[in-house]
Image (cartoon, rainbow over all chains, first blue to last red; front, side, top):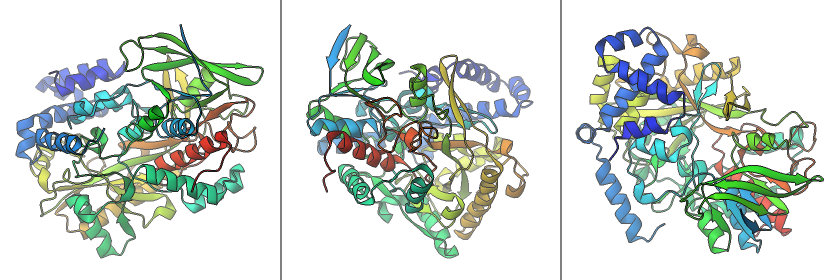
Length: 85
Length: 481
């Protein structure tokens, strides 16, 4: 399955999409991050994307008490059991 | 090109369009409902914020205003529109707002009729107050703080049935507990014989001799109800309900509604921000209803607090910290509480089209900036009163709320309204009090764009009640009690 972050960026309109790709590439490299810090709004976008990526990771989320798979499985089971759309 | 004959063609299946379509179809009208977005299979809802932003929102939730500061304006996409991804909060239109509509815009909305419309909507959506158990730990922190300070507060009323507090209302409800219009009114419309076409982008609204004749749309292939290609819907009545941002663009492209100079203008929103608090107790903010509690102590000043919460990736994106402090706070995610601050704006923006996309200009005015300064101070007070170990305000490092500048604020906005506002005077409004376009017989608007002023509360059932009223006006019968 496509990574959630990739899907998110792919769905963004241009020019945000290209901008996010570029910012993310910089934010992942130490020297790039230093460069980004000179432009605070872009640095913020970079941090946001990296945070999204890190905390989407199921093992990280589970260690913080959030198990998306379990939430969804429970919800779907209830929906089916109660015949909801 | 396929052609359809209908009594009414409705454009958009969100809070306004789905309601009009269902009420009209059940009232015996032949209805075609055109929705630009897709039908979303609830089995595809996986509680992943970035993936659901990509699939359920226009532009992956990244619709931006241009101005100071730039503001993220999330809009839903698909059957249900923004009701698919909102928090489900239901407030009736406040009485002072209705009074203002009467005096300033000539909207004489008969209160008995409007009450019946609200009741009908609330029944259809199973609106009820969130219970403290379902509200969860995040609401409990806010409740305790407000209680200790003696501030007015309460649990919110929501359109949910059988909710178990999955914590992801904004990212697709996996239980289908949230009663958005895509699973309430749209199926009702379909059952009553309405033709529902998804993936339908309306280009042409056919107006001749001052009267609407129908619309033309492009259907994308592989959609739920269509094979693709151009379609024509011939109908003597058309209801545009494409939302506050897209309705004025569609009308403007067709050269309709420009006479007053108000089309696309008067954009009002609820700009918003949020603060976090680190608590001693385990909060588990995503367990329970994210938006279940409100504090309206300063509603009269245009400031309201509402609960907001989400899974770790959502919290990490909005936590106003950097570097090691961010990582440290996230390690304590289970102890984090969050509260949203929403401002009833006096700022006004404008929607235009630029390079084929909406260009939304909006600058925060000084009065709204003052509301944010005051509101952020109050949020800190509330969290401290609730026993917070630390409070993380949405401000640049070292900045106090009283000093914050508009450009320093990181804002989102919700509830855009007013870009095709209703006014009895055709020189001041785009639609008349019955929501018909001034000067175009048979063409109506039924979405947030007709709402002429900021409400100070979440607008979804105001839009639905106005849509219900429009449907019964078109059916020429009173709304049933």
